[in-house]
Amino acid sequence: MTERAIGYVGLDHHHAEPYLQTLDALQAKATVTCACEPNPAFDPSTVASLGDVPVYDSLETLLAAESVDTIFLTLPNRDTPNAIERALDSGVDVYTEKPAARQVADLEPVLERAASADETVCVSYPWQSHPIARDLRGLVEDRFFGDVRAFEARYVASQLSFRDTDHFIFDPDASRGGILQWLGIHWLQLIDYLLEEPIVRVNANMASGTEGVAVEDVATLQLETAGGAIGTLHCGYHLGEGVYDTRIDLYGSDGRSSWDPMGREFGFEGETTLELDDVSGEWASTPHRTITHEYDPAPGYGGSWGKDFVEEFFEACDGKRNPPVTLEDAVAVLRILDAAYESTETGEWIDVDTDGSVT
Image 1 (cartoon, rainbow, N blue to C red):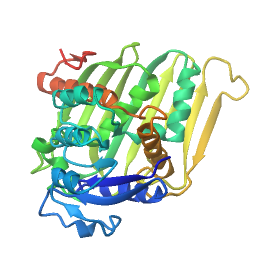
Image 2 (tube, rainbow, N blue to C red; image 1 turned 90 degrees about the vertical axis):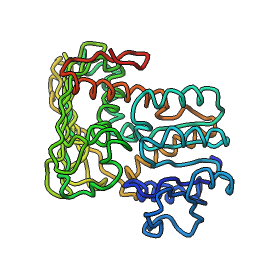
Image 3 (tube, rainbow, N blue to C red; image 1 turned 135 degrees about the horizontal axis):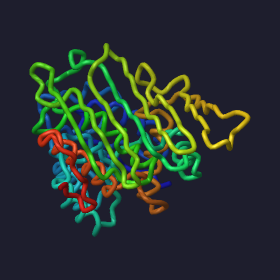
Image 4 (cartoon, one colour; image 1 turned 180 degrees about the vertical axis):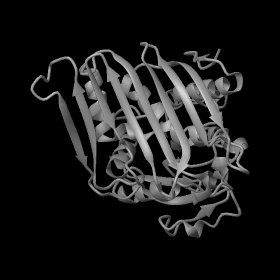
C-alpha cells in the first residue's frame, strides 16, 4: 500500500481526535502533514493527536500550499459537499464524516462530479466493518433468517445537559437535524447494509425538548424495506453522562438475532456478544447460540475495526477495491433522512424514491 500524505480538515469536531489517532496507528501507510480549521475561535493546539504540522484557515489555502494525496473531512454537513468538490478539483482523494451533506439535493452535484473523477471518495460509516456486523451480513446471505420479517433498532445516548449544545452539530443551519442525523443515522446505514435491500417507506415522529436547542433530541421511525420487512428505530438523548443504550435485533421466518453494539459506555474494549435463535429446526440440538467478539484494544475511532475501514479506503485509493461506503451509499441514507424529516412535517408515511426524491 502506498504511503499517503494526509491533510486533515475540520479540527473543531468530536471525531477529529479519534480519527487522528486512527491515522497515527496507520503511520506506515499514511501521515498527517497539514491541517485546516476554518473556525478562528477554535484553538488547534487543543487537539492532542494533531502533532506539529502547519494549520491553515481554509481548505483552498491548504490545497494551494501543500501537496497531499488525501483529505480527511470533519466539517459541518452544510460545508462538506463544497469541500469534497474542491478536493476533487485538486486531484485529491476524500474521506469524509457522515452524512456528507444536509440533504440529498446538496450532495447530488457532488455525485455527478465524482462520477467523472479519477479520485476516490469514501463516507465514514465504519460500523459495517465491525466483526459482528460482518457475521450478521453473512447470516443474512446464508439464509439463516429465512425471510427477514422485522427489525428493531435503538440508539439512546446521554442527555444534552451533558453535551456542548453550542457546537455546530446542534445548529440546524449547519447540520439540519439532531440525534437522528448525528447518531441514529449509523443504524439506518447499517440496517441497509445488513439486509441488502433498501428502505422504501418511512413514518417518523420527532421532538425538540431541550431548551435552547432547535434540532430534535428524540426521534422514532417506522420503516419498511423493499422486501416487505418492517421495523423501528428509536433514538434519543435520554441517559446519564457517558451512558448508552443500543440494540439491533433482526427477526426472520427461520431465525432471530439480538446484539447490543455499543455497551453501556462508548468504547471498544472487553467483548460484545451476538445472540442467535434458530426457528427452522436446523440447529435442533442447540437452537440458541452466541458469537462473542473480544476486542483487540486499539486507539482511534472504532478501534481495530475502525482502522480496518480506513485501510479499505486506502486500498480503494490504490485501485485495489471499491470504497467500503461510496457517495452513492451516502445518498441512499440521505434519502431516508429526507423522507423522515418530511414525514415529521406532514404526519404521513413517505415513500423513498430510488432516484433520490421523496414523494
